[in-house]
Image (cartoon, rainbow, N blue to C red):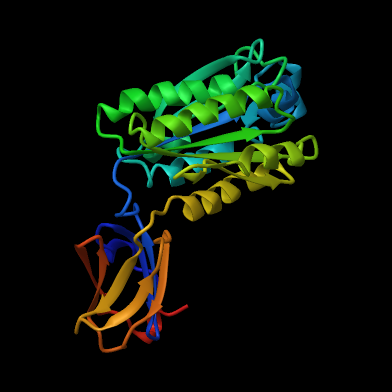
Length: 308
């Protein structure tokens, strides 16, 4: 039994059954002003993934020259899924979406600031000029430039997802950019930032990804996390898991029932999905984070015919 419509902010979904609660956060209340972005690999090795498949209704249509129906390419459903999901984490529901590694490999083709609520209207046909090499540092610089502007508008934290199907050709430059970013975060020039690197297929150099992602920076820890998907259709789900794992902050939170009894304590971090047990007589629970209290009523129509 799920009561999406009954959830109140900061919760987006609520499931209560036999004293067990599963509450999904619309946004992490401990992370204010998160600004997210998705960068899709625009190198030539990805061209096939961006190609739309043609579907003829019948041979007569083909014979008279009628245009075939274009089906989604393999990338499009994944970007739409990520966009819709990650927009729930973003401070204004708009995500910067771009192709990277375009042209010479250094170019970034920005698609725009896209709304998560309008995903079905967006097409992702690939970049205008697919790249000859896979250079990550210019894409990082693009996101940093974007974040500098967004901090003037209320951004307090950043997270950028980079998807690639090949080896990164500027690893030394990437590390140099990351060193500078870490220093600027520590000086308060930049907000806290997380980078997520997702490799797709067997052309990915996992050892290289680990080299980039396992670097620890003073007072920050890791800037990067990474994962590898065997196929492009696994990317969106992987990204969602990585974002949920990483978009948490120190401090955690506590859950209380309606009689102010402590039900669960989250040490160190608050996950995107909260799961805990509650007395069946309770009519609400409270999430307390950094001195803020969020009260969530429990739906009264919690009866057996709603249970699945």
